[in-house]
Image (cartoon, rainbow, N blue to C red; front, side, top):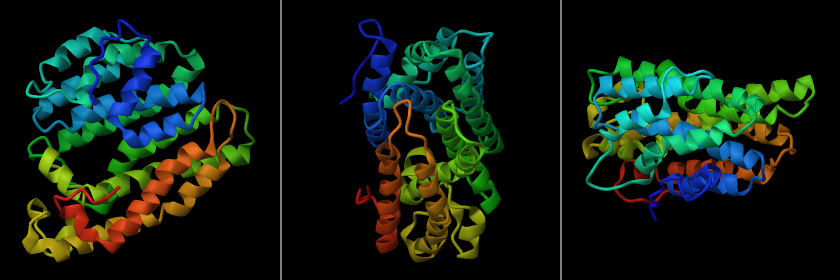
Amino acid sequence: MIRHHTGSSESPLTYCHDTVQDVSRTFALTIDALDPPLADQICVGYLLCRIPDTIEDAAHIPAKAQQVLLKTYQEILKPEPSTSTEAFTRHAKQWIPTQASSPDWDLVKNTSTVIAAFERFSQRTQEAMRPPIREMIRGMLRFIQRYASEPGIRIQTTTELRSYCHYVAGTVGTLITNLLVKQPLDYSRETTLRKNAEHFGRLLQLVNIAKDVRDDYVTESNVYLPNEWLATEGVPQDEVIHTDYRSDAISALFRTLNQAQQHLDPAQSYIEKMPLGDGNTVAAWAVPYLLAVGTLRELRADPGAAFSTTESLS
């Protein structure tokens, strides 16, 4: 169900908790398994990341307009922004699809409400959240600029895939970790957390890339299977979902699954080393981890599902 919020009849934090149920059922499960204050911080942090992600994925917005929107959004996340949240939403509204409402664009329209929730956190919490979110936006800007003349993002190499996963998912791992280590931790434990946070984020992103090959291509014109992998198999990147190349494209898909597999043990270690104070629970982070494990197993058993129109995966 899509809710249409104005933020006027409820608190900003209530809006955020309601909205996360609409934009991500999976992440909502994680937030539901947390307690305050971490549940509130992760909820708002996730939405602050989802807003630029919606803009980056919008195939109908020209690259230059995407860059302007993301730069404006990045500016309002500075400690002392030189522009207003209202200016961002006013500019964004002209790009919101009019044919049908969606949870993601409803969120973009209500950016001011999410920022209001963020600004109610302590300065220390805000300082923990800002850097990884702004780094994510910088990475999105780089990739939009790099592929401005293409119909969408077209990952070329293994190195570029690693870089993309860092910006859009490794930064989320850093965001989570920054909030967790506000608790006093010994040096060894904090070091292990920070080292494995990247693995946790990359695991989830690579699984998403693997299961959404068709959806990413059809809805956003993006291909995240690296061109160097596809070329080795004789698959033109623009034909990645064509049935004529299915078996060869599956070979490239398995390379993605193998990459994701490498992150399983460090991601598990990340969860095991998490401190449990301030509302954190192991169960919350076990949810996306176990879903990733299950999806990897399903894709290995039925890799064609990633290229299919049927929704057979988690």
